Every structure is written in C-alpha cells, then in structure tokens.
Length: 523
Image (cartoon, rainbow, N blue to C red; front, side, top):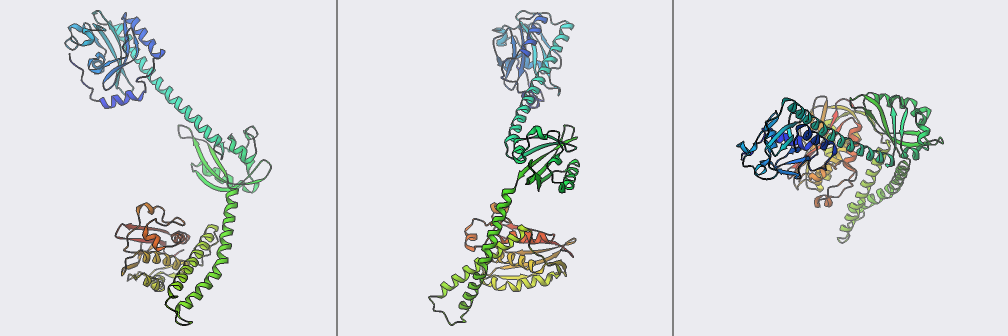
C-alpha cells in the first residue's frame, strides 16, 4: 500500500478547508442530495462528499456507507486531491497503490473508485465528491466524467453558500447585539440621512428629549435645535459630509417641551460597502448634572482655598519670624516643633495655590500677561531664585552657558512658575551633592528649555500618568519627598497656553530630563 503524499500548498489548503467551518458538522440535506444524485447517475452503491484534513478524510455526506471517517493514509481521496482531474481506479485489487489497503481487503471492499476534486475558488483541493463500487468497472464515460465534475463544482458552491450563511448569521447576531446596545445604552443615539433627516431614534433619545420615535421619524434634525445654533449645526454637518468625525462637542439641544438640555454630542459618518457616505449618526449625552457637579466643586474649592490661604499665609509668616530668631533664640526643645509647623504650613500654602491655579485653568480664567521676554535672562533668574531650595536638598542648579540669545512673547511670571516646578522636582530627586542642569537650545522656529537631573529616573509604570492631576508615583522616594501632584499638570497647561508642548526623557538609574518647546518670537 502506498500512502498519498502531501500537496506542496498543504498549509494553505488546510486553512482554506477550515475557513468553511464545515468539519464535524451535522448531516445536511443540501449535501446529501448531491451524493444521492451521484450514486444514481453513476450506478454506484456508495457516494461520498469527502473532506481531507491533516489526519483523516471526513464525510460531510455519505450514501451507502456507515463510517463517518477513515484515516488519511488509507484514503483514496488523499490521492485524488493531488490531481486536477478525476481520479479513476478500475480495480483496486490490481493497483499497486491500493491492492493491500484495508479498505480493499476488508469492508467496504472497494474495487472501483472515481473521485472528482473539490476545488475552491483559490484553486485548493479540499476533498472530493467520489463514487465507490464493490465490483470492478471499466472506468467512466466522458458524459459521466462531465456529470461528476459538474456535481463536484455544485458541492463547492454549496460549501460557499454554507460559509455565507454562517457569516450572515453572525452579522445578524452582531447587528442584533449592536441594536440592543444602542437601544439600551442610556445615551441618545440618532441616525440621520445625508440631508439631516432623522432616520432612527433609540429609547435614550426618547428619554432625553421626550419625543417618541414616530414623532421624529422623517423630521429634520433642526427640530432639536435652538434657532441661535442653526449655523453651528450646519457647520457640523458640513464637516461630517467631508468625512470628519466630531467627538464630544458640548452644546445645547431642545426637549419636546422646549426645555434646553446641555449635551455632549459626537457625530460619525456612515458609509456603505463602497465607502460612499450614506448618512451620519449622532450620540448625545446629557451633561447637565455633570455641569452642576463641576460648578459646585469649583465653588467649593475656590471658597475653601481663598478662606484658607490668607490665615495660612499669616501663620507661615509668623512661624518664619519665630524660626529666624527675631523674637529671640528659641529653646532647643521648641526648634524641631517650629520647623515642623513651618514646613507643614508651607506645604499647605503651596497646595492651595496649586488648587487655585487648577481651578482657574479648568474654568479658562487664568490670566496671561504677554510681553517680550529675554529667555536666557529668565532662566538665569529662575536658577538664582531657587538656589535656596536647592541648598535644602544639598544640590546645585547650573545654567549651562553659553545660552543662545532668544526673545519671545510670553508671560514671564508663568514661565518662572514652570521653571520653579521643574527645578523643585529635579532637586527632590537628585542625589546629595548632585547637579541639576538648565539648558536652552534653539531649533527650527522653536526653542527648547530642559531641566535635567541625575536621579533614579521615573518608573515605567508611572510614565503615562505623570502629567495627570494629583498623580504621584507610588514609590518610597516619592512618598518621602511629598508634593501635591498638581505641579506638572499646571506646567503643561501653562506651556500649552503659550503654544508649546512639554515632555520628558528618563532612564532608570541615570536621570530624567523635562523639557518644553516654545515657538520663538510669539506666545
């Protein structure tokens, strides 16, 4: 017995076979019909739709045979898939490939075999439509060959229909799931045609705006718009028709009773399979409650911060005078207590100032006074002004000279605030007797200011969060150094208001360099 070899494209052939998701499925009348027809036309007692995988031939349909599969190394069909034409064996007992095959010497006692390859549209032979007889035969007539080949093509078409049906079923299931998600997601999801006519309306939209689906179907989307926002809507639709998506645009819509509703709207184009624009969807989320919460939070922070800052500043000043010895030398037992009180009051004042800055930025109320700024002079000033802070951490700040002559339009005090934050952070995480370098470099239309320390570096797990509000790395060093977790967020806001960007480079055990880029000559 000679087992069939493997086709040169065996891996791709198996992938093609598996793509039909047909193996080990239940019998289907659509395939059984072909084996009955083949057996009848060929006058054969056995007909099979045989699919050949790695180790077996499995029968999707079998007429006149009880076995569901056989090993591949015994399969006549494993030989048939190696050929482009029909494989015909007149008498297996006289064919050296099959004469001692257990399927010949025992049940089902194969003598005659004719198998037409099942070729996919990509030309992979994944199995056969075959007929078998227990009696030797003198081959097939030309008419029988054509009929068997045509039936094999029909089986392949049925396989593709099976695959398409599965894909369609999955698509319908996904569509049903998506429909359920859209219907019950809680947000208003509204479909529109290209001209803005409302085509779909979910329960979230009904809850938010008060209209039932039949009240808005076919109505223009302007039904929900205050008249003052008609131009805004036209501009949004124009952007959508040019293929642009709009995300979380905060605006106002009108409910059925005329009540204004503050919403965040996201618009997305809808395209058909050819890519042609057929409409767009809108997702609207009620932000009224969020706005109220944000307003209450801002008012609370502002009130608490203002009420606390004045007495705390006074307390800090008084403690500073006591600490400096203006009122006489303190007994040794009191000095540590006064130092602790002064440091804590200083930390609270910085926290309150940071909270006020964040509140102003979030509300868009932070004032910037732009004027020409000599940037090298500003950097040298920041180094001088923060030298005392560096000394408390036993480090030194060094302005790397020479600096290029750079003048830009900026708010000097705000840039000094950025530098103070970056320098203080660098000092905290520098080793004793270490240096923090301040550099100024000119680029193509931009300038870069960098503050570099030689500390432990920023943990990789924290790097993506470093500019977020109240973010601090959860390490013993960070917890020991303290801080509000607001400084870098404030720095980013200030730099971005100047039309620039801020980022960092870090290496574990080597150090960190924070840098910000500003457009030269403008703010």
